[in-house]
Image 1 (cartoon, rainbow, N blue to C red):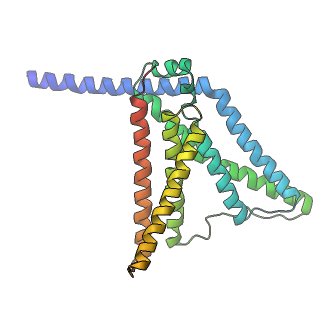
Image 2 (image 1 turned 60 degrees about the horizontal axis):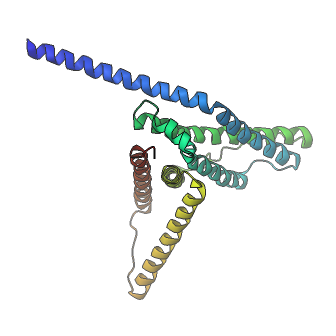
Image 3 (image 1 turned 60 degrees about the vertical axis):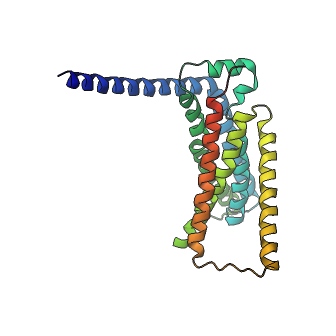
Length: 262
């Protein structure tokens, strides 16, 4: 009988603990939204406004959305996402902000993951919305001024089944780039973008040097590598890059978890 009572008590305690964790998490998210609503609205409005102006100007000049412009848009939006990621913990740049963040009731995970969600899924949704704003404003202006009524092209519409790896590689690179700037936001709150950019450049240069050295050694040694299944190799590389990105993000969380007020 005691065993049954103890089991019931343990189950109830676990449920209550889970409920408290969910409640604390929702309160932290609400607090973050209330405190940063002006910044969020300014950032989203500024980004979408820039997309709108770019679309209107492009349509006025008679340029329709095409793949070349989409590539440019991806590069610029990636830069924007990197800047946002580097400001993930901008309030830790001052002692007052650091105290306010770290002394807020709640677990480290409850303070970290809401910002993580804002940096990754939320910015991706903003980038997708920005492309729609740019594209339709461009097409509308193009139709009104130049009387050319076109449909908004789907940049992924012509990708074949084996071309899905291209999207996977883009996502893996995006996650890797974001992970560096997210880690930098925790490790170096002050001037985190410039410091993270420096680390990013060093990593790129190191990879180029290493790959070039390996290629030269293989050439001088008359060693050749035959890839039996290029598609499988591509997915292995995508998996490794994604795993490294996840590791860097987790390291950023551990760094934040061990942060102190001083």
